[in-house]
Image (cartoon, rainbow, N blue to C red; front, side, top):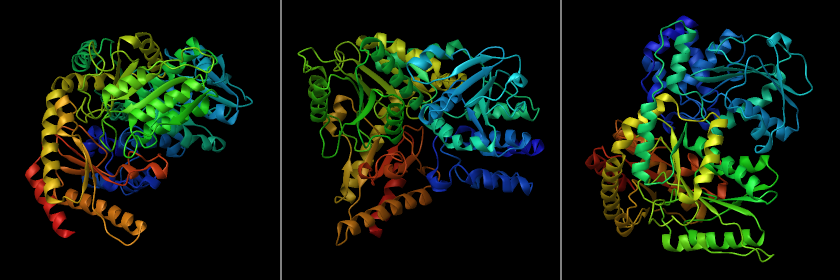
Length: 607
């Protein structure tokens, strides 16, 4: 097996190390957690390690958060060495989140947990805050070694801080072994058939609140496992300082940026940091997260998952685009929150996704900053506006003299988009002057979850961020030209994109959504025809321009053009009635636009 892994590392496709977004053309969501390993095992059994065969393997999990080819191979190899099933091994970029994943499951199942360790706990494991803020219940116990662990009424988690990720000392009294590596992350082993019900829920925590061990770190772990010389990314304080400075220059935010392993890692730290602040400053008051029902599925799902764990936290729908106006929704929602005397937190994207709409910002600022009264005549708690700025990370919302300077506003962006040009997942968050104390809490929770960006992620951002604003501008120009072309050649299509006026104000996204014309006698027939047309268009683009057009959830890449249907990708966990069955297209600063126009003309001629 180790010899085969050596061949895999020699012959693996470059995408296994470098791709951050999953290819939907080879992705079957129902089989995402099994299909890759089954077919990889077939190659192993036949001794086949050809690059072409690896390239044909289906997308593993969902590049790169839930898992990816190299994390799957690492888990498979460790499972083989311990004579267990591959799904019983789960790798994390974080050293503390695997513990939190078990605690979450046991909180909801009302099961006891004891956390046993020898030596020391991971640096960031703050037992007091994890109990008080996350609501998790557990006992801590230090032992000499794993053989000193005995049966417990509940789950026993044994944490070992050693750099040999594959070495798990057997003890049937332990339900979950966690090996925490000083640099690479951690590996969790689910021990025994009776604990297999935990697997999918642990994986879901990895998908929503952190990421799998990164491809680069999995490569190092696999090299160590096979005795090969490894090239560990070197920590560089210089890279981190460069990234913080670049974010400050781009956002003009007065607070220091925090950088996490992914956009959702950052969002989780924001949510838990704000809950922590509310518990301290408004003890006992209900906490409400106002979230657009059709926004990115990860945001939607994560908010509801947090609320499920805490009695006084709830999610409230905030309709923001299409037939709904964000300003009116904010007004009515905050009036309701004041009437209920709650702590209101609003999560929203500007521009919205996938409809690419921008609210009237002057009216939005007025709605957010209006002074409201509780039923007791007291001033209602002012909201915190949590702004997902991924589509337009260059727009200035927060600095002195900007539109949201007077409202407590936190802005974050997904790093796999423009910040890194698609080269890594690391995201970041900044705030305005009014959020300095909140940012301290967010930083605390980013560290408690051990979700800070990795050394390589900082290195990639340090290289990519200085060119970000120019890339945004060039990609917008390509997108505007393509949108105008589609409007001319297929005027019956409805295109969602920013107006020229909004672009002049600084909103220059490079993504638009396309509602294709349809036909049929009933609403069902019309919807079915349009959905079929979406797939026909995407299939034509990716087959005619395979080097540039990709069927993939992406945005802000360095080159090419990316096509997806939000309802079947980014809105995966969104309620069915709130999904958008339209084509979403994102263009990069570097692509053959004339060729894309030619193929689109072919599509128009075919319908």
